[in-house]
Image (cartoon, rainbow, N blue to C red; front, side):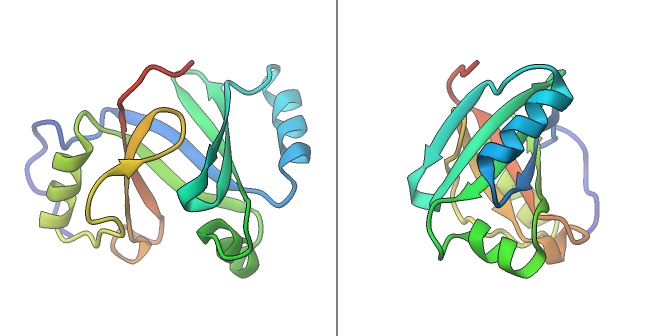
Length: 147
């Protein structure tokens, strides 16, 4: 994938969050509460994806714990194949639709053809890891202010 010009709203403005797949959500919440010195900001049920997402603040970024709510979710399949760990890296963008189009023009393979609602008041789109150096990438746009 060629880098292309770095301008406009398609350029990432920061790391929105790092997504971690977990088997035991309550144990993971307890660990992260100890490690970070504070509890989660938000717990969000993302029904279309069949997951529960729990967000912790870490400076201006977040850690997102992802637990499956059903056996056929993407997170459940990920956990079966790889076990717990890094699930995705989420870049903050100003406009996820423009960012998705730009990444696709640069040669990335979109998983989502259109932006969709995600956890924590975000509009999101995912990009396939085979086109991003082996890491599942999420493009995130804030659409509502969530703590």
